[in-house]
Length: 449
Image (cartoon, rainbow, N blue to C red; front, side):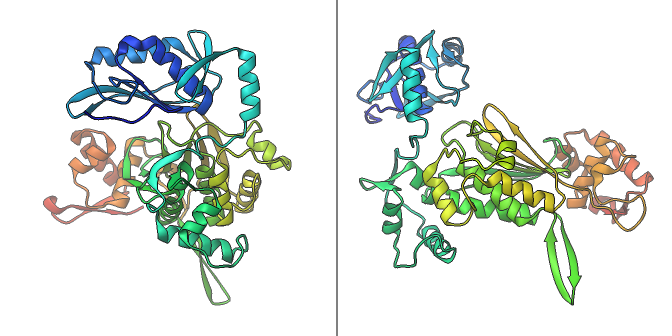
């Protein structure tokens, strides 16, 4: 018989959905204590998987119970998980809007038990634990040897070179112990996220033909530790934005449309202040008119970004261990100065930016400027061509990246019919934007404007 181990402060087992009321209490108490957790139906309290009947109806029953019972509203991931032929219902949940109630009552998790408390007791609890490192200090499933040694070595070399770590003889165990990333032979959650070799964090990146997330020109998924993902994210953005060349005193300089320092600061803060273990993942979207960088989890501070820009405020740090490593690595310049630094750099580069603070995450938006050619009334940014409709702009954008795309490929990428694509190609040709080269079977479209 499969055994899932012991119940913990973030893991709860219920034998069947007949224990629905108790399950909702457990969810509320775990949310109030840790903000994230997992519950299984079909597992005994000792961890033995006995299974239970799982159907669309039973999954809906769990979803409905969460919706009707837990307040404020949360949106858990409810799935069937099978262990050696035994079906269970897995409920993964997270939330930042504490305190949470179950049927109007409040609970806190103590070891593997749920204790009812008064709203006043909750206030005292949250006041005393507001800045306590919870998720970071929890133990992962990885041993202290399951690390990316190359990443750790690069970290200490960078930190020493930046003058933020004293010169000396370092090893992976020394670094992990020095910064509290290992305990009892196991990596902490922060240690796994920063340096684990099991690809613990996911990053989705994509390029879109328009400023809507409709026509995808490229989509990739990176899975790695934070240290490596910062490099992957920066390289992806820099390789897909515009660069200009300036020549001064016989020296050739290539300058990106968005300063590298801006990109690094936003990315580092995105990973430093994220909520890990939630339903959403880090995401970067590159559109013709903007670049968006999304971080899972609500904005971490009671102060608005504008207040950090105008005043010298102390940073409210969600993940202290992760933030410290990124600071020592010089990914973050100074605690609490991220928005001030980004604002200054963007103003120097004449770049506009904005942000969106949603229930599930924080999105930073960098506005891109259209680049115009030396020929009057001609631009290389298809989104600013006034005489073209949205479909024409989309098809033209795709052809700029793949001039030999077939009608079927264009239809799939643009979410249009083949007939619509053909009409659009004819229109673009008649307006002088494209010209056919080659035979019908091997058509290549040359962009004329």
